[in-house]
Length: 246
Length: 108
Image (cartoon, rainbow over all chains, first blue to last red; front, top):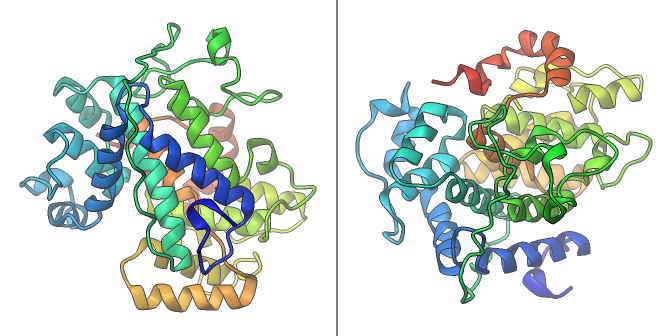
C-alpha cells in the first residue's frame, strides 16, 4: 500500500486509499473559486472547529441564535467563512435558508459557499473514517500554486434547493459527465452542481467510501465487507444523529 | 429508504425505529446493535465508548468506515429537498419515526 496510508497499521482497501489520495490532492489544488492555500485553510478550520466552545454551547442550546460570541478560529479566514465552516461542521441540522441568505448577503458568493461546503464535507468524510478506525488524522495537504478557474455553468439556475443548481437537461458539453446515466439525477448529486468539479470530486470519494450510485440500489449482490442493509442502517442512524431528513 | 428497499428485496422486515436509536435489541439487520453503537460513538465525544464499540464491531464483522457523516452535511448545507417519489414512498415511516422535523423546509 502506498500514498497516504502507506504506513497505516490498519489495512485500507486499495481503491479507497487511492480515492483518499485523490481527494487530498484536490484539496491542495486551486479550485474553482478558492485557491489552494484558501482550500487548505478551510480544511484546517474544519478540523479546528470541532473544539470550538461557542459552537458546543450553541449546539446544546434550544436555538443557535440564543448564544452570542465569536467562534474559536485559526484566524486565516474571514469572519463569514469561519461562520460557514463552523456551522456546517458542527450544527448542520439547524442550518436554514435565512442563515444561508445571510452569509451570502455578508459577502460570500454562492459559488464560494458551495465550494467551501464541499471542502468541509471532504474533511468530515476522511477524518470520520480515521476516527472510526482509531487512526490519527492525516496531515493536511500542501497548497499548490495557481489561480481558481472561476467557471460558473451558464445554465445554473434556482431550483428546489437554497443554492442554484444544474438540471440534467441543462448540461453543456463541459458538464456532460456530471450525473450518472440510466436513472434520474438525485438531488444530492445536483446539490453542488453550481461548482461542477466539486460534484465530480466529492462523488469520487463517496463512490469508494460508500458505494457507486448504481450499486446502492443493486441488491442482487454485495459490494462491500458489510451488506447493503448494514450499510444503510449505519447511514440512516448517522443521518438521524445529524438531523438530516435526506 | 434504501434500508427498507434492502429489506423488501430480501423478504425481511427491519425495525426502522433503530434509525432513531429507539431499539434496544436487534432490528433485524445482522449485528444492528453493534452498528448503531459504533455510529453513535464515532459521532459522539466519549473516546472510551468509541474504543469499546470499535473493538466489538471489529470482532463481529471487521472494520468499517462511515461516509454518510459527510453526505448529510452537503444535503443540510445546500437545502436540497427530498425528491417527490422518495417523499411519497417514505411518508409512512417518516411520520412513524418523527423525522419530518429534520426537513429543510421546517428550518427557519
